[in-house]
Length: 141
Image (cartoon, rainbow, N blue to C red):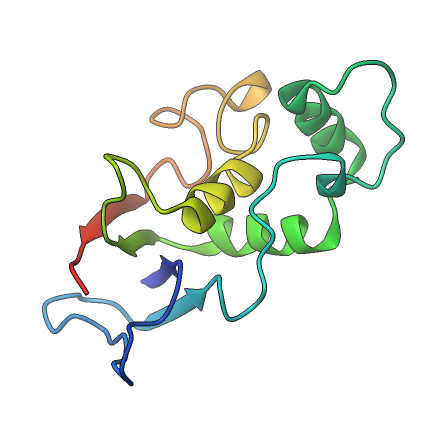
């Protein structure tokens, strides 16, 4: 099993993220979005194709799926998420939501036509890794 742990930032004071002992998996990849300089903003930078008219993110996401025109950073993250059997969002809750950097990761990578909607269908029935699992690990640092 391949596990991908998306994390907005490494724990403070030299702490480290590690594989939970009860997690039965062969590979755990920890993706520290802060360390890689992830841009959380959904915008024109998500795509390599020319935009026409008003910016409508979902319309542009479907166009990028059909023409393979996601920006390289978005395309690479989509590929990694699709390969994962288990996604873990490891973060503190921030005003009843994910921290901004992680929320931006979800917004840019979990795109229409790849994870949900269009010919893909709903996440439960045909989206990215329909047989896979996801978990939200709420931690206080």
